[in-house]
Length: 328
Image 1 (cartoon, helix red, strand yellow):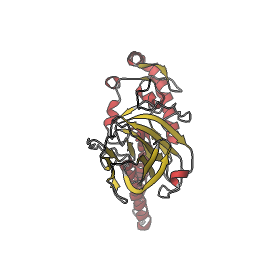
Image 2 (cartoon, helix red, strand yellow; image 1 turned 90 degrees about the vertical axis):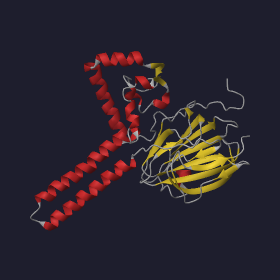
Image 3 (cartoon, helix red, strand yellow; image 1 turned 90 degrees about the horizontal axis):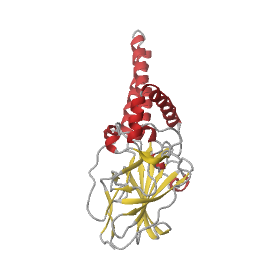
Image 4 (tube, helix red, strand yellow; image 1 turned 45 degrees about the vertical axis):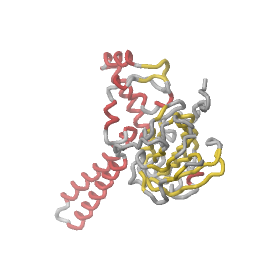
């Protein structure tokens, strides 16, 4: 039974079969590696497999494949079912890395390509010591690949954030530049007038998304679309996107929407939420890989103060975008 004044949960969007609905080459490589790893574990680590089975929680397998340990849940944690308590997860230390865990495979593959290319051109430069013009070209290519490698590592970084705890505060759901503050006459989910805030994320920004308030996830809505430049206003209407519909835990249980939108370069939305999940303010719930756009829609009501201004550079979880000064 839904508590008085609270919204009922929506069914899971049937399009969301994994936490990365747009697919991609890397996710297929990881799935292939998962099959190889599971075969190896069942052959050579039978004791480990039995131990993990004994610790496993839940009553059904929400994944389309066999589940032997928490790594097998990576792309299907939004489907519910089997899981492990944090203290029983031997891989939880990966969440403490300074890089986004859901981007570790891309980080590894792209870094190997970039730094491998830098090493190759450095080797070639040494071989052409007698040909200065060719050697200079090789060193320039070496430097280019090295810079690309550094940028890739910089993109997938996951810095810690201090989350404001004041009542009524709404924090930014993304890093980037605030490019739009618009009034909406009526939003069906919000149930009345609303304010929409648009944040553009360049390839230099942290791309992890965070919850703007402490809230419960009511539903998710995924829509396929184009990959226009995220700076263009029409990208918010036409690009691939995933809308996370939440309801605040504190009275008056304000409804908000965080919309993840792809860009010209970023084509991979990641969101590991499902209806019924509880989020603390500033908690991570997904990311968009490479440049993109994130929008926040919140109720426009008496007592709402928009703190941030157009052109501000904001940080997810720590920058205050708005403040509600009244509780009812």
